[in-house]
Amino acid sequence: MEEKVCPPVHELERLLRTARPQPRPDFVRSLEASLPRPRAPLRAPRWHVVFAACASGVAIIAITIVLGVAGALPFSTGAGKDAEAGPRCRTVFVERRTHLPHLVRGHDGDLRIVYRWRRVQEPVRRCR
Image 1 (cartoon, rainbow, N blue to C red):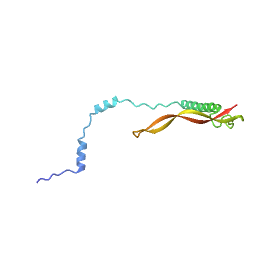
Image 2 (image 1 turned 45 degrees about the vertical axis):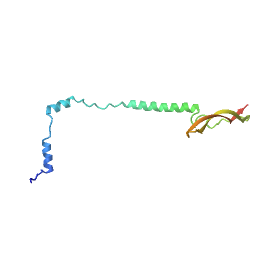
Image 3 (image 1 turned 90 degrees about the horizontal axis):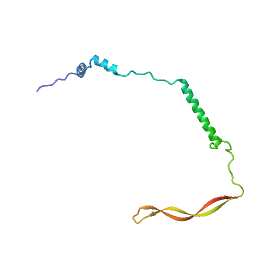
Image 4 (image 1 turned 60 degrees about the horizontal axis):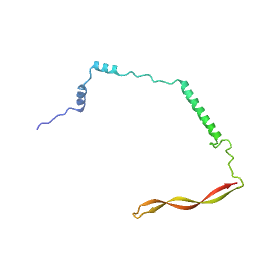
């Protein structure tokens, strides 16, 4: 029987590296010449950044003032004065008929919504 001898791994690596195909130098130069040249990164002038920051600040201040005048902020004008009903107001209950939904189990076992007319008492504040 014949024994096969394998060369060491480092000899195989050397053989593969020397046999690696290399492109022709003129092809490499033409390929590099066809690539676009990298541009220098464009920087915005500093005054653009300063202008944007100032505009944002002015916009936030304007929105705060408008919301403060409208009374939508907790520290707005008249925030501590809550509206109160006059002494001649009273609460009465008004009875109304409304359409209320109810869940009903059908003959097949499925749930469905059925609307029924019901009388409901609702509190209403009446002032004179």
